[in-house]
Image 1: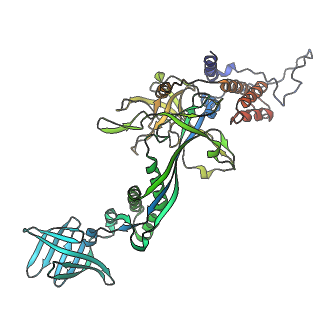
Image 2: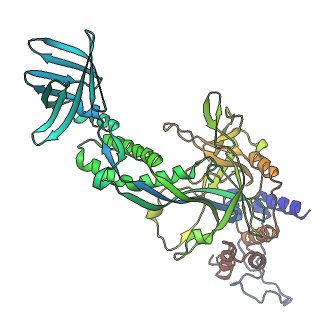
Image 3: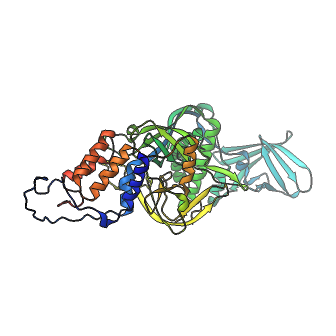
Length: 523
């Protein structure tokens, strides 16, 4: 019964009209009088009536402590053999070769032309493997030679031997020009180094991903996306990709030094080399001591505090599939996960009804997007302040996987994933999940209905609920908005009794003591 009453109270708190805000300021510091003596004479003191914040601001203040960062961290130790770029035999052969009155032209499309006066010109296809050159003549028949390509001080030299005779040619023109650099690199291979360069390296690697989530029970059940917790991810691959990213810097520097190409072409080359490096690591590297941890953090971390230390360990209780096969292709699945942290008296969000959400309804998203602008702002304190974006529901759509979605134009950026989507009453109706992959599609984001989360919670025997901390915090917040600092302070101190590290309660007490609360003079 207590939870039901409190839930109704939270809805009333958000839906309250500004006209209903009380004007009493009993107990607020900085106001004249002793706060209680009846002198028998009343002197009217002008008191401003605070304006109730809009629903978005009220929701942020009410729920931001319950909206959390969720990080997934993979660690492991990787050892790998030193590598080198190997030029395939066939690539060395492409070009024009001349010697003893003959001219060989080997094309990239595996065709050749041999001009050998006075016998004539011969054409066909060529193939070079394991040092054996096979020439399939158009006129019929096949010639085989032992072939060697060497780089000398005078250039490249080709030696062909059929066992009885040996022929030598020098390359007079390469089969590639500067515009073919991408094609050349596509044919290059990364292989373990040989000789003195055949060393082994070792590195401790860490790959992390960040997202958002929200707390739905006071004892620490957290809802987020399955992809935020890496439900479909291979930790080994994530670590190999992280290592490849570290090593790729050397390849990028080599590209810049050795290839005079456009920025677009350079980016293509770097992407190509990076893919080759990842492939090499997956094939040749060895990984051990792989571990995956999940961390949940709300509030803030000071300049000398590590957010990872200040966060809570989480464990996955249930996670859906991020991507599934449907109708012959891959599409989004039930991208929802439930984490559990071992905490008590946690703040929770207010859950709503996704079934009532229709096209044209206003919604807003709160989360922690990673938008790459941290360097522009002062870093005295790592304030983990959530970002709010708003929009409307543009459609209700069903994926080919059968999963329902809420389409909206409210911004959902990297890091927002797993965060709550609210309706215009400040209740959670969805989970911010994904954007279309097509780069030319603008302002289309997708959320999963909150029913996907409540169904998964039910599968693990959990029902969203509130607790004593929410009751105290909501009452204190409502009093703060109407300028009743005595009640606000008393309720916020109760919050701190229940949870000393609550990230926001002390701030409202400080505002009241400093005269910054709504309706206070000088606030």
